[in-house]
Image (cartoon, rainbow, N blue to C red; front, side, top):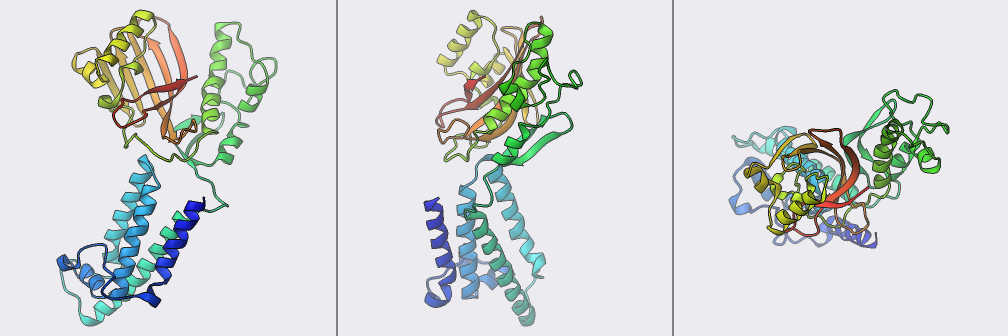
Length: 347
């Protein structure tokens, strides 16, 4: 927090001190003015204040971009590109024709207003705000009795969901078991029946949703990431240890693949594995054990307090020739840029 406040103070000082200490030879734009071609670039390079605004905007954008990871960073980059493109239409500048003197004056003042507003917004986005909390982005829906939740959620919003009624596919409208358990708070505090296959199947609705919420309650903004926008279906980054097995022989085989430095992409080339995907999920077929695994990404954050970004996933493993089923909530990640993605922990 102290570092963020210090950073903000320095940025604000840089921004407001221009009129006092400006030296025309010192302030450059964010690009090389000797290579300026478009009318917009020439307007910026021809005005000391616009050059400073453009340079400041680029610095603020870099700070904001570097504070984000994964999909959030891509969104920030896309918005910045769109803003740069929109400057032309918003200030009446034609990319392919020169401006008259009067049109150039109007466009220059328009750009000043545009840049000042943009820099102020970037400062606000960078600044710590006690009234708001960092939010974790839920990429795949979490199902409840009367709603499916996606999007960015704060810790308080996630905590509220622990009181929401769990969706049981209409199997227990009054609640589960004698205690009529309806939500995760009750599930964590009260006992539920687990004597029969049916009991365990019904409890599975709670295991899944409450296991996800429990992890989300510990979500923090990561200090670093080795995921580099890797998707859970990018086979070249996936460890063979993600493959589903049901016996020791299968586990030994996966260990052997790992020691050989193989990825799931290598096993696909060998015809031992198939993978399909849709949005934030991957379906992996492993012929060596007649098994398949469904992996669905829920969110990305630091879930275990080590400062690194992990992927929270739900995992369903199924026998393709039998009735075996298993469901888990896992953290997927790697500890450096050279490792393959693997399960760090599962519950």
